[in-house]
Image 1 (cartoon, rainbow, N blue to C red):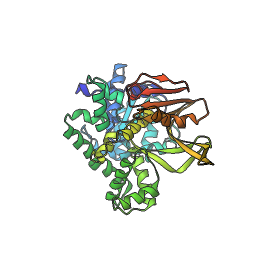
Image 2 (cartoon, one colour):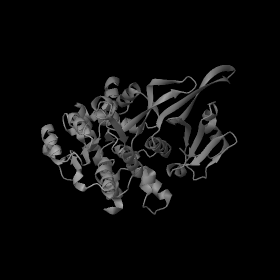
Image 3 (cartoon, one colour):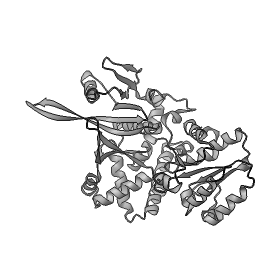
Image 4 (cartoon, rainbow, N blue to C red):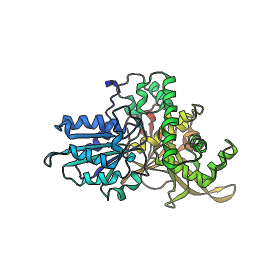
Amino acid sequence: MEQTYIKRETYLQKLIDRRDNGEVKIVTGPRRCGKSWLLKRIFKDYLVSNGVAEENIIIVSFDMDDEEEMYGDLTERGALKEFLYSRITSPKTNYYVILDEVQEVDGFERIVNGLNAKDNVDVYITGSNSHFLSSDIRTIFRGRGDEVRVYPLSFKEFCSNRTEPINELWKEYYTYGGMPGLLNHHTPEQKVAYLQRLWSKTYLDDVVERNHVKNREALSALADALCSSIGSLTNPNRISNVLQSVQKTKIDPETVGNYIDYLEEAFLFEGAKRFNIKGNKYFESIKKYYAVDVGLRNAKLNFRQQEITHIMENVIYNELRMRGFSVDVGLVESREMREGKMAYIQYEIDFIAQNGMDKYYIQSAFKMDDAEKQENEIRSLQKVDDSFKKIVITGDDIATYTDAKGIVYMGLFQFLKGELL
């Protein structure tokens, strides 16, 4: 339906900027986040509106769960090659080839590289598993792969064409998240069922099958543990102990680490490393994990843990990643007098967001009810002595301002609707 046509202009512009650049455009992200719609509808509409004939846009989908027409026989490499080359008939005509969920084709890289070698063929592929795509781009595509990472709907996209008060939209967003398929479901019961079905019938099945996971129950319990601990520092050893003591699931730290990798490769979670700002080094063994979508996170926990402070932090992390920032967790040490002795005190900064030369230190603070709470939130920022911008994002609806110490304060909605960065 037309009302579900959110144009996803940020991602469309990324594709436009990369059009005919001689590289394979690799569109990655979790299943059902909108990759197929972006290419097969939004980008196709753009091409047609700019003079490309529809017969010169060749689209093949290999996602067997897709509701659109299937090309099951084309998952065999020889049949796929024969089909594609039968459609590319003129060396003087520009063709656009879109291969959706191409990792389902064994040896797809040979066909993709062959197509990309043609001057008149522009290739776009999608995939839902980074092990087969983003982590191996340089190897598979001989250094000629250009990745576009797609996330579920941002809050700004979610609000487009909606007329409800922003507080009501925010409640809906932080409860059910931004998976585009939710637009086709209208009651809370339908939304819950859809998200839980994605977990049980799409995500877990895919991870189990692709990685030959023998213990599906342990994998599911691990996903629960990651969802429960968003915004908390952890590592495989800690998670293994939690699973054994709380959920009575016996799983060793090495297996936990492997399962976390599988879930990250499926774009369901991202890990943010801890960075010592003054020491200029990472702590390799410990991370904070965030769910790629808070609605999926809530659904995995059966909507039992609705801690708005942690959910807000997860939403801010995802927004930063959508805007192209790399994100770390900051640690700053300060030598101070405590109980009559000098000691090193550690202060945490929620996010260090960096994109090229731009860097920001960001604190997520749902409420700052009094001066003491405000001072606690900014203490870590004040310990950083460089000149990069320091920001506090609060759950209150406030106009953006800068205090006498140079720290910027802004409301969550102002940030999510586009201010800053």
